[in-house]
Image (cartoon, rainbow, N blue to C red; front, side):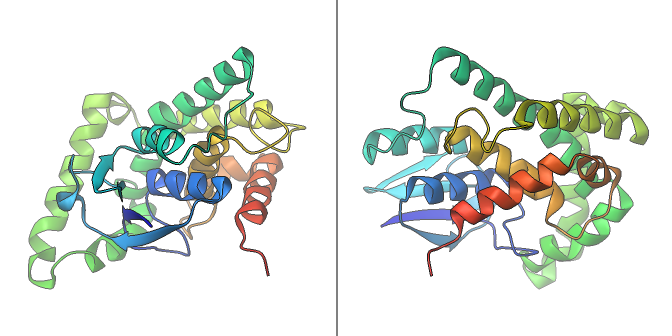
Length: 232
């Protein structure tokens, strides 16, 4: 049984889009796994998720999926042509290298997001250290955003970047059931993870409002959740 080491669930889903990404891939591929609540400092690279499979610990969501393709021999992307792979690559990069940082800002820096995020983070920390560690983690997120570049913009400018990403994603999936093909692929695991992370938590920010301007995005999330739902 594969162990998926990840954050504790919050708001009915995992608070990390990268953990959701691996959960979704496992679900779409029909691979059984055991979720294990873990803290980042216990991970091989200091970040979650990671899996334990065959006595090995594999970190990084993309490396995990590559490993599963080889070890379990289930490749959701088998049969995709060059254009489909290219489109999926662009969608993944848009989510993981741009939209992610807007989501990070929305949860950790924006007041509305931090109000919802703070108790989730606090619950995962030792009670006696919460008051000390929380400000340190939040400052680290702020430094990450500044180093990446988005943190140097104003609030409105940051959310405009996220809204632009969402507009492009909505245009790409318009009229499609899935991201790049007529069936789920690994790129759906990525796209679902980020869209669900924006739409499902009870965090009201301009990023969520921007997503709600595109009905195709919410419809897509619901469609993937139906595929992932266990049979009754």
